[in-house]
Length: 317
Image (cartoon, rainbow, N blue to C red; front, side):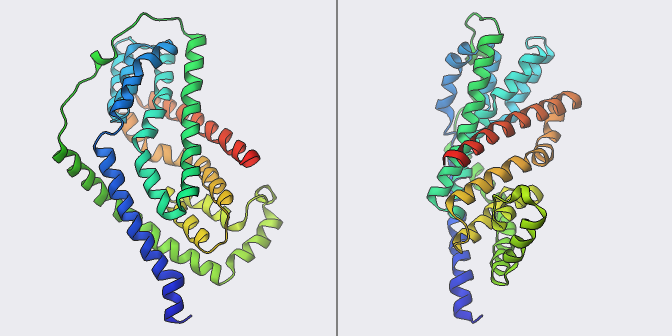
């Protein structure tokens, strides 16, 4: 392989990817730091009345748009004081999955676009957003049917406004960017190069023959798509995106195959990712037993909703 071919087939696409990735990540972190979700928190009061949920649940829902740890701390205090039953604590924690999703939505979108392109990224993010909306709707329906109506509370009484500073917000966004970009580059560069040479040396052709013989339950997926599924399971979400970007750039996968592979990888990587990232701080807020129970229930609910949208996309997408 000569230098010119190497530059056009690998180095230049990788350089463009890293540049667009860095720009998108910087913009996303600044948007998040500026509390773009503040106006969404105003929806909490009418929504919790629909689901017959207590005002402290609405306050936690609003707070989760800015800080998941603060939202869970509020729930833990209310539960410890006897203001929330164990069932209400579980429902409140599940209910907060939507604001938690919105908290990281800009970063997710601005990371996926450089790897996948606008259409696949929009489809993937849109489908995961649909799953989050389905989870919220399910909690509201259950609460409306299973819980008694409550008198109007005061959601804002549980919230504090510490003021806003552009300087602090932008400094916070830059700090997040510098921390995140290092780890993303460490994953992206070797995976992108590795996928390129796996395709060049015909490894995926050999995998296709092996899969058809040994893993018939994955026969609906190509070997390239299976590798996208596995990267988030053994590494992190960015690793799956890097693999998907390399394969899509080489023309090995269609938009539909990429989106399905990322959704399946999201489902399979849920248990490991949840306990690796959530259990340490959950156990610091709740008791270890309660923390483990909340994480298991939350992630099963999340995985179930993504399975529903994955099946829907596979059948009708």
